[in-house]
Amino acid sequence: MDALLKIPVKATAILTIVVVLASTLAGKLLWGIGFLTGSLWSIINFSLTIDIFKAALLQKNKNSIVFILLLKFPLLYLTLFFVFISRVFPPLSILAAMPLILIITGASKLWAKQA
Image 1 (cartoon, rainbow, N blue to C red):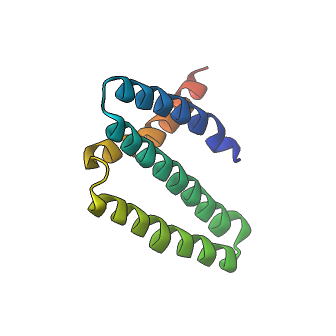
Image 2: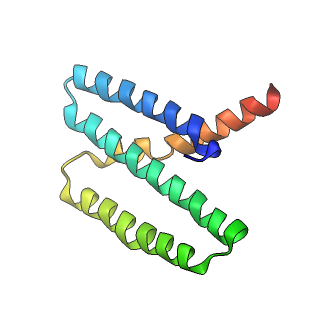
Image 3: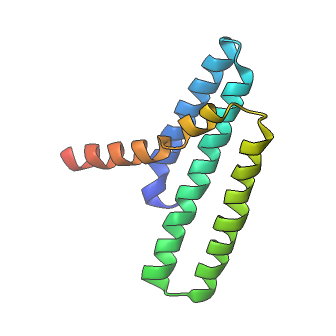
């Protein structure tokens, strides 16, 4: 795993587990699983975005970029679309988890600069 993602992914996973357990204890199991789904989607999306930037700026490998883009946009986004239209999980639970990795990444980078 990339050094940029190591701490944010761990922190996001821990926070997601806490939210899933709390929502399960509150009797909202589907809300917790929706939060888990949104969190996993967000982590995968963020890591693929980092891979696209690396491939474009550092490696300049067009085959790698095309593969990642074909994986990210049709597959990842269509999967989320079908999860939303299926209405199995509350949409708000999925949306609540999506910015989590970005918030944790930003906070961890700010704290690292201040230390």
